[in-house]
Length: 137
Length: 157
Image: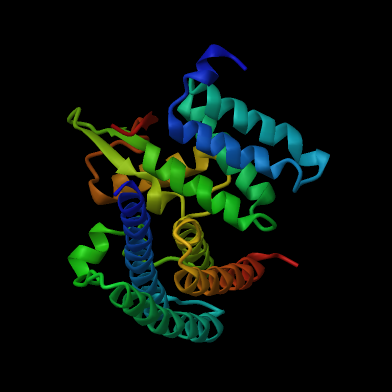
């Protein structure tokens, strides 16, 4: 295990443990995406990558493993946020709790939906509001 | 004197264990009642009825735990604020959510109460308080059974 993994905050360790418990409960076909998710969580160098990997794993596995994905969703929603930079340079942070209840299969799809909603709320916004995933303060 | 102090500490641990179990059980009852009111979707009737059975069972259990405290000559904690402060149960969100999320949330709550009950059983065992131990073992059995049912609901067969 790398030193960054050892110093990862508690929520990331918790999330990684949940992912690890999925290995014996799934077939070898799922192990690659689970390994990628576990690595993304422990390394914590790209929240975009971690959230995207979570969404992809969820699409593939949640039907048979609802509870672990519920636990992961709760941990991620408490720990990460979506940051939007609006036209007037105002920075708005969106809570992920309700966004993750939707069944987006990728981060790109989630971002497109949020961007469209921000545009619909305020037509002065461009069609593509810059969005990035950040750790909650 | 040393023996009396040690006995007193053990009795306090039993009382503390029961107080936490009471607070957690009360919080769980409130969460289950919340789920009973707000669950929606294709499994509405099934879940609405199951949650009612569960919170009614918890209501009776809470009374038994509180009365066990009184039998030990300890005042039972009461009042929503006091009980909420004494509980580690997290509350579910206030927005609409799928029935499966209510079930998953209640699973986490039952797991938390189960952990509290195991601590209370240990304290009662170390204090040779078999009556409290018996009461707590029954609570453990009930929570384990409810967990089995809730987890079974989430299985995709």
